[in-house]
Length: 280
Image 1: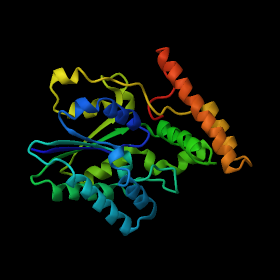
Image 2: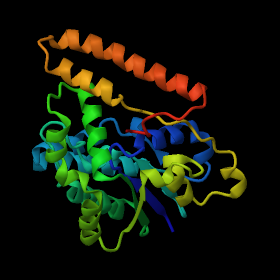
Image 3: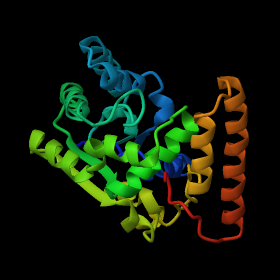
Image 4: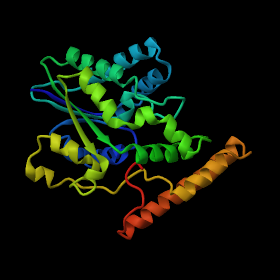
């Protein structure tokens, strides 16, 4: 039987680290499955994020068409394993462009499942994988990320309140399970993955039917996309609220991003714990 794993998020729950793991171990993983990563979906996932912003049917049609094309390019064969990893396939990360929930996730997932049914010659076993976080730490992570990426001027308390619909990951998953009762859903709290063999990537490796001797050759990677400290986040908030023009602000943020990267690298080289978790 063909098997498909849809690794769809949530945003800010170790997805960047998991995807970096797939890239690092690509040559090994492709011996047992077809990994489909962001570089293959550069024109696909923007249609999903645009649909979540606008709700326009034309964006959904474009998403379906491009997802169908992606599947048609797969080397369809018996007992094929396909691993698709991209959190933006369920829409825009809440907190940006006035998107505050995952309300369009069921529609986007439903479209993907229909495309899979249409393209695969035999029924495929589809598993949908999510990593989750508690509402407080997730909202804080989204806030810090958005402060650095955009000119967000909301404080953490306001941001947390607006993100309530999206930050209850269990409620979002419950709705998806009700909508798609025949689909296998797998969820893991990010904290529970800290001490596992491959960190946030462990659930994906567990899903693969990989011989033990091949699994032993996989390389765990360090956490990616670590976020600013709370002190730096407050500084970013002040900058975003300042009279700096966009170019001036962008230059300052570029320097801050370099500082964050240097701090992460130094801590990794020193083999000391990093304050923030993957995708925090």
